[in-house]
Length: 409
Image: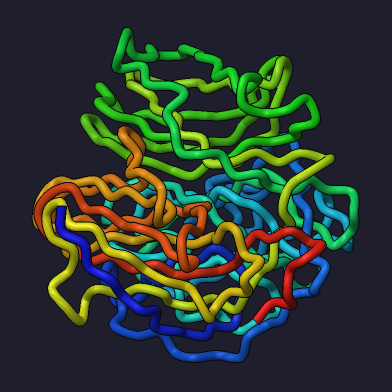
């Protein structure tokens, strides 16, 4: 296995949040984003408060702010969260979906009242529907905005929770990457089927929510998948959209339900589901979240990309304080020459045996949010399985012990 090492390149943007840096014409990626003024975080950090998953925008609904119309070129929709979060909320944890795109395009979610940043939250191909997790700073009057670059597209936003400057929330404890569900060892989940995922063996009784990478593979029909707290009514939200035969991942954060379980529902056809946990939130322990000015820490496009079976080491030493234990980022793949998958893990730890973070087909541009543990010298490893692929990673925050964390850079 080949290993290559990179020092980071910094890029400063306006908005706090887990944005991918995928902008440009259509589905393309920019060579550079424009530096902007950053926003400092409070030194106390922020704690997470999970909510019952709820839809806060659906442009297909005639009663929405768009009146049932899709967002057009350069269109913007305002999303008010005032009914769902307190004034102490500093950032929202969302699932952002683009549907029925008429052109290759990208969406940007950002705080109301702030300048739109040169980043993207979600990239879409013509005719496709795709979702991506995002953590976005909350702006004026507890509101966000969503921007569409090109063509027309319907926008759906689901709220999973928020980070608060109060002490009422939960802290993050990272879990070593390991697969807790893979239905490929048995039968797929059929139409209208529900399967539960038991986290009780790996999280304490005080756990309030989990975050995991949810992947769907070998879908026999276009479908969507919903994750929600076990024992409660299935919400009108979605977390994963799949085309026939497609393999798609998405980082999901969801409140824990009865017996510390999460339920997964498949809408149409049959599909295999895979769950790789990355962490849990608990009221009596865990790390606090520190948003940083979004920074590009890796962009392989000036070079030749990451080759087959190659591993790249990316160090954040000198960028994050020594107290940083995990980072939040968006990982994008583009210029893919063949179907492949990408894995991420802390330097010094063994490469996961079965835990992909990003699945790509030839020519595809796609991104997925990550909560990545930092290893030796505050670095991570990024592995590409096949062909060549360019990888772009944007840092948007880190987790640290609030008792020893330094003020956000």
